Image (tube, rainbow, N blue to C red; front, side, top):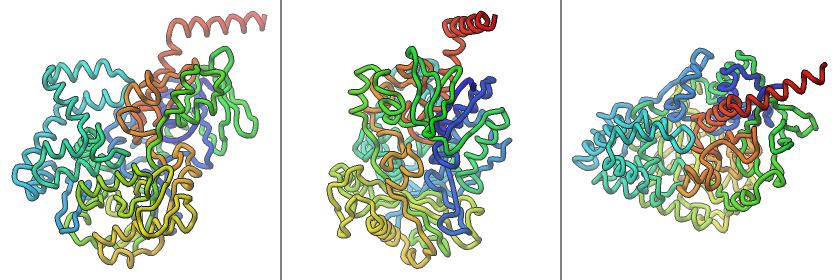
Length: 538
């Protein structure tokens, strides 16, 4: 009987298993898919000569994560690579905002949009440099982050701490308008905020956009050499080296609960796997509460709260094998790993408004990845392995475009949406379509079939909006990995601090399990079990 059973071999599940194994626990990870990784996987499904990342690709939060750095995955084969520039956001008039690895070069580029914006960028960067260690600790630890919060407050003083809190809560549009006179800095903030489901007018978007920009300056947007799956492989190899096991093709259908405590899990084929100390669930909150754990074992209020749980929007992603690099019209995008495509902040607002009205956007905002630019091992010399994703409504009421995309995501829907996305790229890179050797379209149902945590194409385990963050994640009064069932911990992106490949939900769940196991009451209970066993043997 393992000390812990971990449901799901996504990055959070594998991080949780490694943290427990480091403390001497025996760990068994059960994964529904035929391979581990969740949303951190790669393949050669578009073209055999090209490596394509299935879901996530760039990993600034991974590089910034103390818990993942502590795992020393480079000792297990993981290597990182960077594109020459981090993010580019071209405009149709030929201008382009570029987030460079060097803050001086970023600032110089923003000064070209409006004199003085370079100094404004340095101000934001200098503030980040002062607060980054404590801010990241506060972000990645269970809420409330008492120690790091107190250190941060002491470092800044009350007045400046309040100003920082206000800045973090601002919408991306407002923070951009306060900080910058020109379009460049505003584009970088708002474009990075829309990596999540936050519009330019949504509270917290400015803070998220600022965080992503500053991570781009401090750690870049690195990619694993050889594909996203290399990160999963390193986590799995490390766990195996500690004696942990990962069993794939084992879909868990139930967490067994007796006496108010999680005792183990049952799989789809009827196998029962007992857990001596804990069950950690790297599954979404709606899949756990009322799904794997029956409502009879949960408080009635939780059922109401889960009925109000809000998913983030859906996602459509296109992978391309390109015969040559993307023929960008503007200077800047050719050097960047990540490219944002929308003609200004107003265009981003228009896109977000169509999503809010449940319309498939006619001019979708694209996040585009140039993977060979970031890692030359991804495709033959002179070619490019690329992808782009956009958001779509979870429930489609209509199509803002002319093609009649229905939201049923039939093959016709997928191809029309891919054509629409290619038309956007063609606007900024004339001749792009002629470079396409092959493509693959992943729509919301496809994503969910490949990873059940990507419910309806949601990639963040629930909305990033403020009303479902911190103590509201996944329901009011949470913000921690503990659940109403003793010995059961939520270890997925549905838990604080949410989406992103940083391993924090998994690490927080593992630490909570370790703390509980070391508590006097838990030790007394374990001793009682041992005494009963001894009496039985006698």
